[in-house]
Length: 169
Image 1: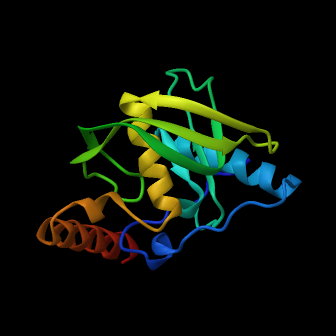
Image 2: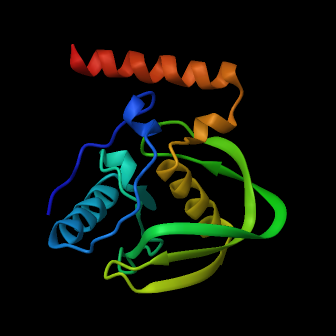
């Protein structure tokens, strides 16, 4: 297992649209395990493959306090079950240190394949619905900052670029 580097906004690789998974190989299983290790190390609830520069439609999540309920969504899609938007304060491992109020659908049905290619669907609400939508956005090259005003987005971009330069030099 390995902890992978997480790409940070405004890295252009975060904008790449992920490809569907077509083969369930040993390499895919290792990638999933590495994604869990990375998510747990970074103290996240979810992680999209795009965030670790792996451009396939894979998402991992775990909402349990003891990290005992790992979920894998391969080629996930969702449909909105409740049009009423909920406002949540979202954070993102690719936008570290920033938490912003974002409106998302309150309840969704996610359809995906598990890590072995078996199809499943889940109706989710609250925090899990937010996380599903957030992570699928990553697979589509969209970030939480895209829901913010241009002014706010540019401020965050400047602060993250400044922090990155500081780390590098």
